[in-house]
Image (cartoon, rainbow, N blue to C red; front, side, top):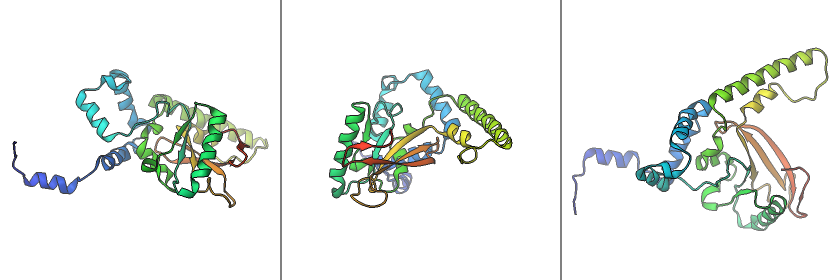
Length: 235
C-alpha cells in the first residue's frame, strides 16, 4: 500500500479544517445565505445552461453533493414547509395531533420537516437555512426582482400621496409594499410554545416571511387548536 510523505502543509490543513460533512455544509451554506438575489444569479445562469437534474453533473460532482448535502423535499419551493424545532418527549403527543390535523386539512400537499438530528434548533429556527438554503432561492431573475422592488417603491409613493389627501388607512407601517416585494418565502414554525399544554401562546404556530438573506420580515402567530383539531386561520 502506498504511504505518501506527510508534509507540514498536510498538518496545517488538518489543524485548520478538521470539518465533518455536516460542518462543511453549514460553513458553505452559511456563505450562500450572504449572497442575496444578485449573488445567486450566476448560479441560476449555470442551472439554466447545465440543466435542472443531478444527471447533468459529473460523477465527482455528484459524489461531493452526496457526501455533504442533505436530502431536500422535492416541492420545498412550492409548498410552505412546517418546521418542528422542539423534540422533547413531552411534545410528542401534541405534535402527533398537529400532524393529524395538517394531513386532514391538506392531504398529501404538505411538507413537514420533522427530524431530531437535522432540525432540533430550539428558538434558533433560522438555522433551517443552513440545512435547506434552497428556501432562499428567488423564483425569478435578479433583474425581475429589482423591477419588482421598483414597482413597490412607486406604489409606496402613490400610497403616500393618498395619505396626504386625508384618506384614512389602517396602520400598516411604512414601506409595506416594499417589504412584501422583498419576500422570497415563508415557513411555519412548530416550536415548544406551539406544543405546550398551557400558557398565553400555547397552540400558536408562528408563520415567518423572510427575504433572500433569511431575515424575518414578518412574524404572525396563528392559533391552532390541536385538541379539537381545528384552526381559526387558514394556514
